[in-house]
Image (cartoon, rainbow, N blue to C red; front, top):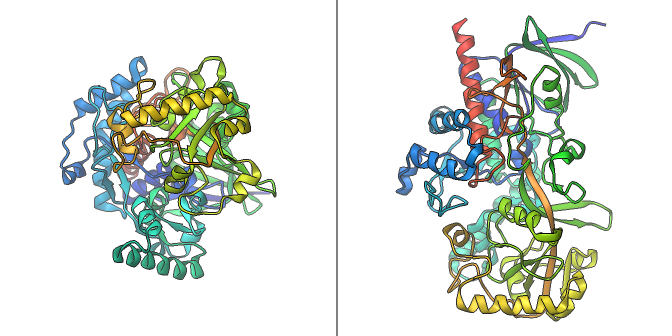
Length: 565
């Protein structure tokens, strides 16, 4: 039986930041574009991410009074990447990242706003910046997406309040202090009124931020540019004709179809982080590793590309962008995971210990570096690790899934996710570590907190640590006492927020074969592309920054080919 044939200039597989950037850039330049998404919803892992985009030397930095230079960014990346520094990819990223931001601001709905204070993760290295390079998508009204808004992947519910309201740090402070000042009350009432209105119509708040805002703005831009979107569509095969990748075999609505891509096929499906079998050979702890990637990110497009002669990148320091992850199992057996990125570990009054009851690393370091600390601790003593805090900390900052304030905790205690005890020694017994060691470690930590210095691991000793701590706490924003009973613990495992081993490409994101030759018509970006950072983690937004940049590059190149015909 003859299959239905669809023809486009460009076919983009995947609807995260990279795919949407490629789709919009190509369509804006005159291409007829199709986005194919395997999941029933659009947005990929971007939609559940923090949405930070790292772009050195972006033109918006001047608005927050910060200067930058390619030489500084280059020096910083050389220091972090070491002998894995990829000159071709890094130079392409540094040259075209600011260009991408300017293009999006001129032609799309997307607006990226630089953070005045956002230190790179190794702020004491030459070339590091204390702000400006990390950019956030503007807060956006999801209603502008119309009927498509319901088809955007829901943000992590654990990063929302009232099961559907997206809030940032400032809004959280207003809500926690609703009756503190007239301004807090007015802000809280306004947020709740808008949320209740939106929930009746959309099932969630329409005020979007973080990664959800990035997806919604790019998707609105792509739709306005004429991009066609297919969801719940499985790509079965990529075919070549006359040496060029130009045809897809797909299954949609239980029917197989053929899609012809006259100019290019773009792989942007998020990599293979959710495929335990594919990831296992490259992980140090595959049996306990917990990924935050969507379940659809199973690497099928990478496998299809390998059949065409593509190769996976082996030159990475780590195969995943690490994050410590805790997991709550509900009475119904549902597994809810939480990435401990920045909300709790750096705050004053928390320590992390291994099975011996002793600290093993700087708790305020980046999520990637923290997991490296877990993995590198002697005798695997920090696999898993335990976060320890007291009642005052839990009420003020929350920990993991347990939110700040007087929130109900019984379900977390009943499930064992949150351990509780009246003394540190009893808490040690509850989590299976030496009571004497944990008591000693807490007492030592409390002395460090009083002095404002951590001689063991340097928590709070650099600009990045302090920016993640509590600026109002003295003498060190990352060090506070653990003294007010009861005491609490949450167990964390090594995990990730995405893979780093993608397909080897050139500086234009064209997929290469085993001989280093271009596979004509085939492009990769996002986590399907080899990591520009070579599996290191220099700063917030180093995945989305290159994802947008190389997606943009691909789109503009394909648009140029179409207009040249």
